[in-house]
Image (cartoon, rainbow, N blue to C red; front, side):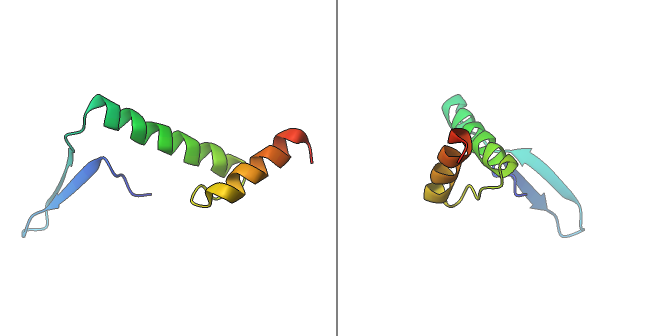
Length: 65
């Protein structure tokens, strides 16, 4: 998993640090909503990247088809 809200800085001596990106509350909430949606779809076996497939699959799942 790639964290999009964290920046990794690697120094020449091999040390790494992570720092949070400067995002507004609205941007943080939008990213959190995207992540929750991806997790939800993954629980039902759908690829979050394929939005059409996910929507159709969820409709079928909840309709009992």
